[in-house]
Image 1 (cartoon, rainbow, N blue to C red):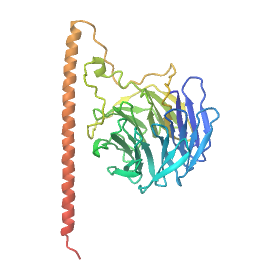
Image 2: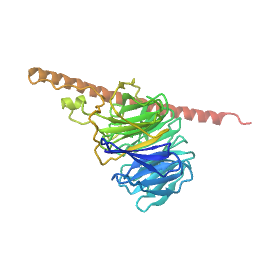
Image 3: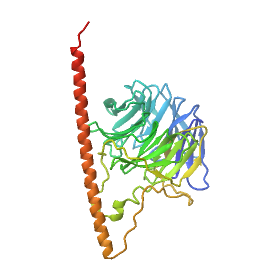
Image 4: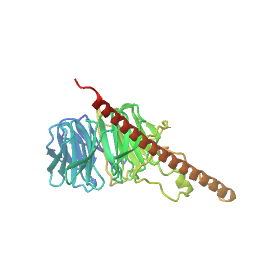
Length: 407
């Protein structure tokens, strides 16, 4: 990741070169605030969406040439490339999701079942499905080929601000102004996890490429790192002085970038797995990289970290979006520090004591795994019980309404 793309209320798109002493590119063309940006999978194009109702495709070079796409009749809230780079999907305040052919520069079709502004739309990893999130408080899953909505989720109490697919393509996550983050399995449409860890609206989220972690950005000015394997909050990251409006992992997962209404872009270095006790011990025979999360409704207390980070004085007056060039490796300047996201366990010295200590730790790890699996099963059973109870209450209410005397 050598470049980061950002958009802002100042109507400009910025391409930040992360190598020292390399200047940023400032692209001017939009007539109103830039709400979303994304690099193409190849890194040769940048797409931007704007309140001026247009999408622009930029070549991230000094010349800053762009092509304009027009079809929406309202503010465009998000833009996203398909994994093959052949298609774009956009969402808008005109209540539609639109799909475009990139190389033909042509509008293809609309998806039109939302009844309020559509805040976000994303392709699935295989490009067959599209997820959309709306102010009508729903998340919809669409089949790109048939252009039909195959399922809608209604569980959020507030506007749904963003949604995305898990890297496996089997799960989706969504965030809302009700300060919650929820994860569903789209194969059986079941709610898997419900996180209520922020104190204000959640504005953005991004899956780690491993699928094990989810990071969120909130109006409470914090970023939260969620462990999807254990179903709990790992870390609360403080850095922004105002609302954190967006966050995105690099393709390798080694870095993530966040933007906020404090006019700053922050680049963070991760070490989620480096200091993982399972890797240090090398005794975990089955890697717990999830196909889909399994725990439900964690309520862990926030943890705090004080990471070193790279801060870029960004657009004025407010950042609207952030993205990254996936195909490059970011070379961080030497003064940057590694984020202390987890404690490091040193390898024990060679000898008899080493073997005894390793054996003890293996036993502890095994017991922890058993406890985790037991809690997950209990939580799943509790969820099933709650569903049955809700169904009984709904049936009782319907019966009561039928038995009420009519005038």
